[in-house]
Image 1 (cartoon, helix red, strand yellow):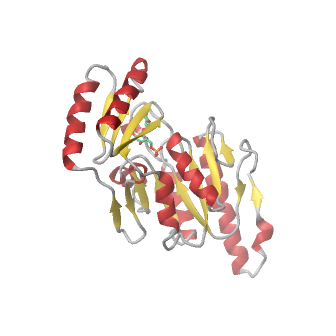
Image 2 (cartoon, helix red, strand yellow):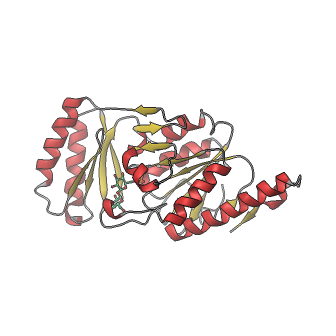
Image 3 (tube, helix red, strand yellow):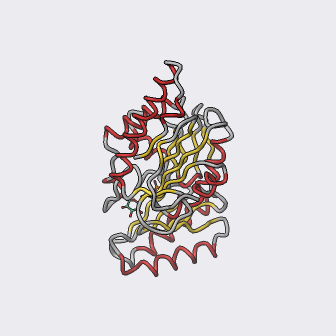
Length: 267
Ligand SMILES: O=P(O)(O)OC[C@H]1O[C@H](O[C@H]2O[C@H](CO)[C@@H](O)[C@H](O)[C@H]2O)[C@H](O)[C@@H](O)[C@@H]1O
């Protein structure tokens, strides 16, 4: 395994790109609604997607509707809600749902329970719920316990901790399964996967991509099974710029009949 503190190399070959959103393509903000991906970065993503024959997907805890808004005007394959929703390259959607009575009961019980924690916020995503405590840090343990109690009451749920949030999602879904599903389909199949993420939910994606012999990149500090690290979101943008330039060079070298392997480099 490479030194996890080292920056990722600029790769050659046929790659498939998977990007987490919050904390990777966008800076963490006080509230989820304040997040944006800079226009220049969205354009880089689109360029990389085109140069990879469309093998670029966003893999996020956010809903696909939110992801489309954040990626506008571009339209990428998506996995939302930690993989509970997935839209493939042909726009076919694959959705894991919870029984409607469970969703209604959770909405009501969580809304009522969170009233005792001023500053806490409930984000309802259909088949999942995020209990945000960024503005109620003293309630973190109590909110974790609340979420745990819901998994005991509703065994179809699993816990997903994150940055100042604990989420309730359908049991058995994770970002690794979403990436595995993409990797079985065109245009991803047969390519080497690259996954960049910053949070606990991304570790399942790293595990899958490591197993496929791909490149895994953790953004920021913290324990990880990723093989490489980028210090922060700004460094992700810098790496994306370099990578785009590198892939463009490879493509022109190939079109001139040159050996593009000699172009492998690093940041
Ligand atoms: O998988 P991701 O794309 O990283 O999404 C994870 C969650 O991100 C959002 O919450 C987090 O980011 C917010 C904005 O920076 C921040 O205010 C919050 O404290 C973080 O937990 C989003 O709201 C969740 O739905 C995603 O699951």
